[in-house]
Length: 95
Image 1 (cartoon, rainbow, N blue to C red):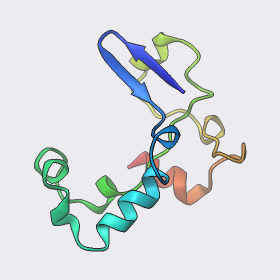
Image 2 (cartoon, rainbow, N blue to C red):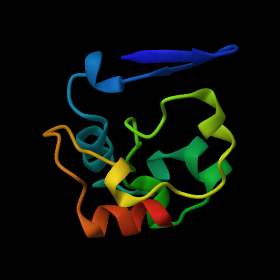
Image 3 (cartoon, rainbow, N blue to C red):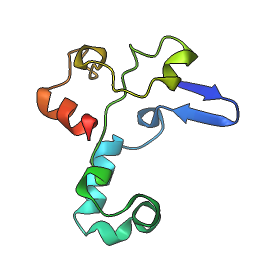
């Protein structure tokens, strides 16, 4: 799945990577955060930067939602099994 807003394309990386992005990042992190040179340069070195976040696909049914500055409710987030995300995952997304 992918969508485009002006010249930015948002692509579901799971469709073209050898493993999930979460798995690939976890594997690379085992040898240290210094491998993430550009990420650390622009995003800092906080652990939350290197963890998988969740995107509320169900919530985004129109472009106007991109202007909303608050996180949608937990019920708007679903994982790949079509289940609501865990409380821990939602707390992580709030960070």
